[in-house]
Image 1: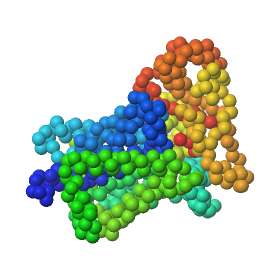
Image 2: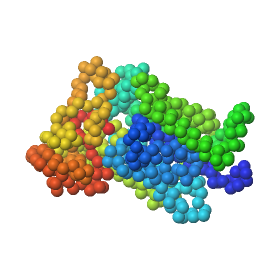
Image 3: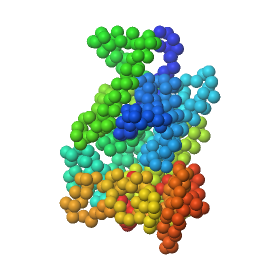
Image 4: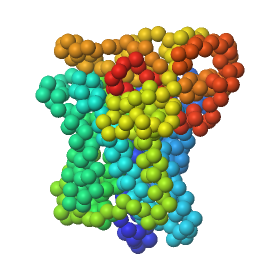
Length: 529
């Protein structure tokens, strides 16, 4: 994967590892769009917002067509980071982590451009950020597993491990869920999440870590498609640079064989080099990909499994799996996947980014926030001055954000008033507040087993969350927000919450980075988003 001379004899700056990583990251972005892409084809609602939405889809597609081009990938990374920051307070775990991944890449790019100047190469750039991202993935796995060491995740009846099985079953009705597997699944999930990073770190077992991780996230991807493909992009960083050189040789040979077998493809490779024709070819491919995405992402697995987001994901994984087996697994010895790999970057100041992710994972245990903390559906409960974690006691909390809970009694604004009574939960949850996962097959399973299972809850929210909501409403120009709430046993009432200096004082930092979720009135740690 070194810069070398191309077939024309001209010096080429090639980096196969960077191209593979960029390609998979762009695919993850597209597969994370869900049905939002349908709005882009409704030109009756055309606006600057829809134009930004179109750009959000166009840039990853443009990048996929030539992932080796930094002129395409860097603008894509920048735009994606801006889009995430704009909605930071409501993004899921993997998108929150993606923001730090993108910041790491862009900081390394800027540093390399300034430091190397005329000597900048894609290979040096890749070798600068790749070790940092590998370390970040190891940290993500650590926290995802560590948070699950709690009494409720290990309780198979309410464990997220059980709920996730039935979410998959809702998508794939014939997916087997025998009682014995449901019983061991929490322990199996915990073991796998601890085992994958260990296998990836040890050179001799790295290939087994990649295989296990691919299979594990394949099933999760039917529910969290973007997350699984994002993890696949990070897995690509665990293939050594020298191995990518050997893989590229096999890819070139395969291309030559196909060209010889099908003369039209060989002719296409020649006429595509003309600039105008190349432009037309790219336009056609972009429109084709856009149309394909629209058809699949606006479809429903309930009517036609293959013509749906899940179907598109399945096709993608089949193709990716074939490529992985053909180019990597069966050539394992030849590729030398077990070469020593760097996890500590050459520039030690880059460790600030993994350190931030480590600190972020600590937040629920120190009482700072309960969402976007790499909990990964762990049943973790650290609110109300208590915890269900088996290793870290509640006395470890040094902040009171999660202990200071309030009950909304009534409000004239629907965002707040939805928390004033019992709320029936299914997978959609309370918009912008929380989500308790209760898939249809799981509810039926609990009924069949005569288990104590609730689908309605009263909620409390951290006072910090109340401040965030009121401040955001005030910033949007909402006035006369009537609110009655209980805090520490005392009832408070205001006719103009937006004018209350205690409620309307959340900073941009608090809103963006100290987002909180609502807490149901259940002593157990339920499976929540």
